[in-house]
Length: 402
Ligand code: FE
Ligand code: FE
Image (cartoon, rainbow, N blue to C red; front, side, top):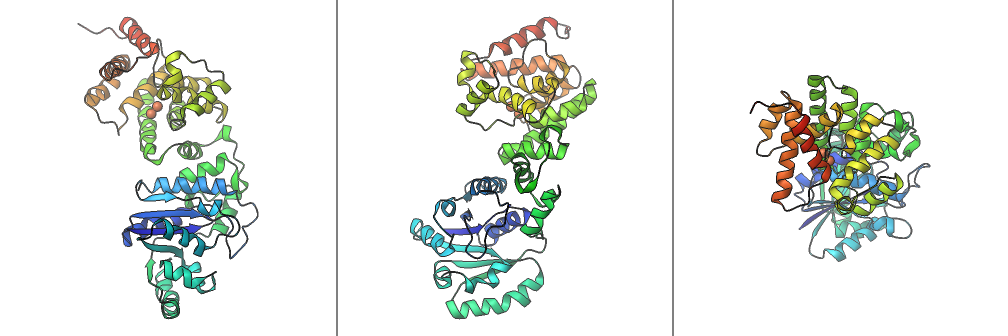
């Protein structure tokens, strides 16, 4: 087994880290990549305003998740949990103890590589792990890397691989932090990480969460969910806008409701219930156990309370899972967009897509009936509001010629 170890302060983790991690997995054919945020780096003090370890861990987790290598990439809190300075030699010893037979590779950027002999216990480091250094330019590879590679392999018999990443995002963390404090720099960050920074007001950012522009709103929403769900949310936004255009709905509200509709999807039942209590959302018996039904309600509350969305958006998110009798246009749009967005693939989706642009109420009825049938097939309880939605649509919806 080959394990890559990528340490750093990740202050914050940016696209350069992401690219380096992705390339290392490919080039070294790693079976596992462990990202390890440092508590206190040995070689320098953490700059003022550095977020606490828990925040850097959370941002690094978002980056690991965005690598979309669920069995490969993981984040370790071992250096954050360890007392004192985060010596790489200690970290490698711990990983070696955990994986006695693995081949370890320590990943690092140019600056680190060029000073490796000055680290604490370089001989231990080079004995426990191979060194994989990333250069940003061709010059790094030849002019800078070659002499150091020579030196380290002679002195420590180090095993060294150097990789040039020509398109590597070239930004120092110091510069990036300066940009963030001025409200810039998001182009160097994953939206998930940028959103996390905004929501937690890290690095001197002070965005008014109740007045976010769309890119910032997306970033915040994506920072709350898993990376694999982001395409779905993007698809719902796209579909909701199309439906709003077709049926004369409010495009802006459709967009914002779509962006936020699943933002609490990954909260555990306990947190969902806590939010419902906090916001005074009353739950029936079924809802108290069905975590899937709760994210619509808690998502609506977050949209209104944290992001200042109006009642229309709140309602559209609130009803996107169960539907209900007598829905507004925006509620219908979000319900249907969620059902038929471009990433959806199930039997009958094409018919539902066609119908959605021909007769919204009939599409809604078909969607609701499909859900009811599916719940029956899976022997799951059906929410009363879903049944009411069906009955209402059968009675009031577009009359079909039968
Ligand atoms: Fe949902
Ligand atoms: Fe959804």
